[in-house]
Length: 535
Ligand code: FAD
Ligand code: MLT
Ligand code: ZN
Image 1: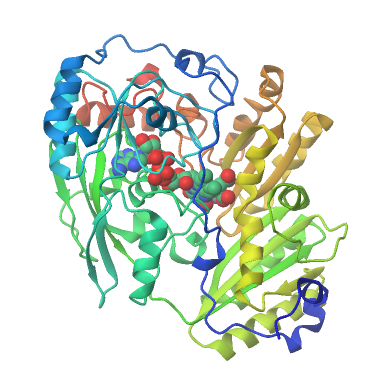
Image 2 (image 1 turned 45 degrees about the vertical axis):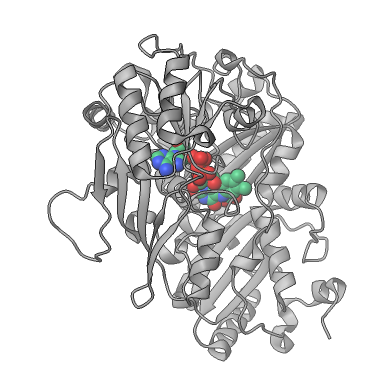
């Protein structure tokens, strides 16, 4: 008989010897199954020029529309129709409105045209034409980006990859997937799982984000601790340069040291160097045994020690180590429908979700059980539960993955995505709380195993004074720790002017030179990634 949530919540790792394990629990069914929704923007439409003036967080620098760009004409639209057909050229106001605003409803452009190419050749023709005409372009994937990179700032033409969603091939000996850039991550996960493999990355936006968007942002996510960065997992890709040149780097080789590995320029360059059209990615084997534990810790030091202990004792089966403070749990309980706190109400400040994935059910079970018992005896874990079925595991993951969704329900979200040495990672959350007092809710969560903190500051509305309390403090603090102001979300519009907090002037200059070489007319994703002053 399945346990009720109540019975389950009372089962702590103190008594976990009698726990039931689910032999084949896979992570992917645990995340939210619904598509990420586009939130209604909070500001009136067609006021793109106001985006930079409003204090949404890091967008305070005023950026003017670059007058070098042409304005769209009816001849341009006719040309696009001639290459894409009527269905590939969208001018419908409602559809354009959705594509003009980001997932948080925070950044809004004023594009009048959305293009939906169906092939690499069509992307090439679009870019070649835009380059000649000096029409600025925003490549768009699933539009789940969190830094304002995927939407226009002014009237840039939106080139969506949504129509390029075909799986090209799957090598089921080596686990190599080749597909078009517009494939939705969750669809790819389902596909490769049916073949006995998994995608090397997983994130809360999987129901909407595209693999091309993932590559363009070098998305991290929940499996990074186990499978590492897309720089390691992407074997090859095809990209179209600003002038329409098709760059075929779609190799599926594991090893290839012939010259510079150019694909890496496109991984994480956020659509500023080219449009990614196809990819080849290495997929790990799907393993039969997955377990998920939800634990609480009394203090941050215990969380750090638990991470080290998990690395040492769970070793090869550790597949996620996610961190949330009690503010995140409270928020999730308030705003996410149907989720329950797996642990009895307590004063505990920190929560950790641990997932293990391995090939031997009873070995994995014994290993995790033993680890949790020792961690409790050592005082690292205050309380905890291990999921006994998929629905409990889903509930654990829903809490963690739902924090961003719950955050936007509050109103304004000042969102920071920082790489900081683990021992210092929570200091900034506490300092921020001191700075802001009761005026805002400060959340700390993230991928602790990767040293990646998500710092969300929530309030009912955006406010210049509040922003001034947060920035530049958050960037200066991170820079002083030699951290990164973008661990995984990218720079986009939000942090283009802030890159110097994490990169030297020489590195930024070299990036600008590469940008100028590949996109001399700067038509690709203008105002994003790099400061205007270096271009
Ligand atoms: P978009 O948002 O459409 O675009 C992102 C950037 O990539 C833009 O600059 C765009 O111009 C460019 N781009 C998109 N497609 C292409 C292409 N084919 N060629 C060239 N440029 C392109 N991110 C993480 O790293 N880890 C997480 O755990 C994570 N969790 C998330 C959870 C939620 C609920 C949400 C809403 C977002 C989350 N994100 C996370 C952020 C976001 O989902 C990722 O950045 C994702 O990789 C973006 O993919 P996308 O297809 O939506 O790209
Ligand atoms: C996450 O880890 O939940 C994501 O990166 C999204 C976010 O921080 O909002
Ligand atoms: Zn994240």
